[in-house]
Image 1 (tube, rainbow, N blue to C red):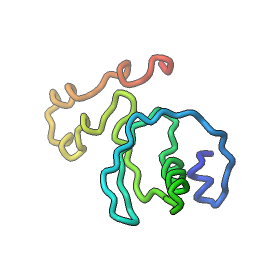
Image 2 (cartoon, rainbow, N blue to C red):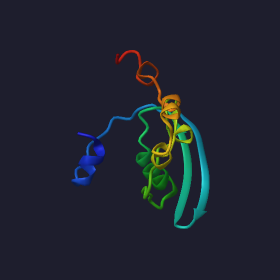
Image 3 (cartoon, rainbow, N blue to C red):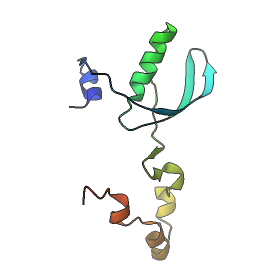
Image 4 (cartoon, rainbow, N blue to C red):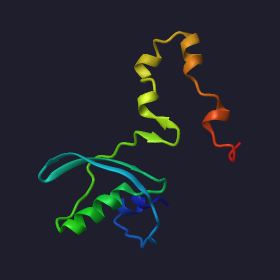
Length: 110
């Protein structure tokens, strides 16, 4: 069961430390007591844990109130087509925007 589901039930599970790589940590806004940041990291990163650990190091505590994934692997939200716009496209435009399965799914899955 995912850790966030257990946490919602009030259950805490000991987690083994794991090595991650943070490629980017950018503070976007800081209006005490709230902060917004952008993070680019390796897969398997628990962003909620990063926020928690940062709050502990600062001695004030921290929790996430919002989390948005803007990319994963080769895919980026910026490259996507909003559904409202997608509904207005011609069939030819839809075909141009679709990603073939062999490009979208890792080869070890096929």
